[in-house]
Image 1 (tube, protein in one colour):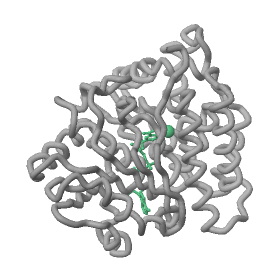
Image 2: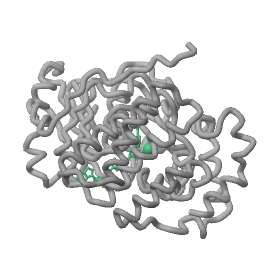
Image 3: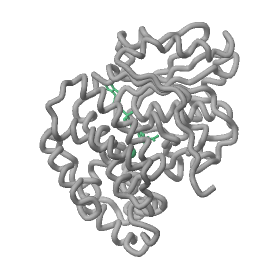
Image 4: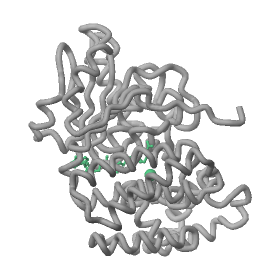
Length: 360
Ligand code: NAD
Ligand code: ZN
């Protein structure tokens, strides 16, 4: 097929306090009293009674608190799936992820691996998943990644960092309740928000751009600019708007791709464990030659919000380590092709990427 026919999230609820409706949303999807709903919840909420007391559990449902100190790994997904299978009488009715991009990705991957054999590593790539996932619901508590709407779940495996991209990956239901984002710490708000800004920049400046991606990308870009640059909006409006910016940014890259910042930050993440949001910021700060106006704008936003980025994170790395990062980055061919064009290999050489890493 020359045009992609991609799935979208079929049901979404938006509104402050909409989290309270979760019980009603889940009830019709319960397969039996022995088939639990499994709630994967960011550890940060363990003591947040206001949230945990509203998680609608009954019968054998389980809440599993998950640390997000590290971003999702294939081994972590496999372990969670094994534990869930061992402790459930029947295959779960559904998996509900409550958290940021890390937890949303874990929920998607666990839902897939409950119905597919083997290790999640076997499915990293494009369209390798054979069976439909169990019903899964995404409830973001921090905005920016677009993971709530995307067709991928990004996992670090033993040899690579790559998503499980499949028609079965997107959520069956998303709950967008901007109130859930109110406790996010400021730097994290900025880094994850900038992931969204960078998604829209990379999509809008990519060679894969079409009107579908462009319209979503522009909405997302303008919302990010309003929130992080223009300012002057109330905290509530800001939370509402950033949640929608994240959604539109995710929609924009669905039909295009990300670009240079993501291609390089995947290398940092693989080798150094640098987190996605801050990693993208560290990289984007040095990408004037690719995205001149937007890097200028980004630097102004850094100043405006008093954000200091780590410097010199690659300067003491061995040749071997730098090579590992370069190889990870170069393997992300669709990202480079989107950013530079079909002939990207002419300008994006080993040497060129090394120069870029050494600036960071
Ligand atoms: P995250 O999920 O790792 O969360 C960042 C931090 O914010 C954590 O410490 C978390 O505990 C905290 N947090 C979350 N919600 C909070 C709240 N309401 N109050 C207080 N603290 C809160 O960060 P992220 O930037 O949302 O996600 C990054 C992950 O998303 C990476 O693993 C990345 O690979 C993935 N990602 C996926 C996609 C996709 O399409 N699937 C796209 C982009 C990024
Ligand atoms: Zn991203």
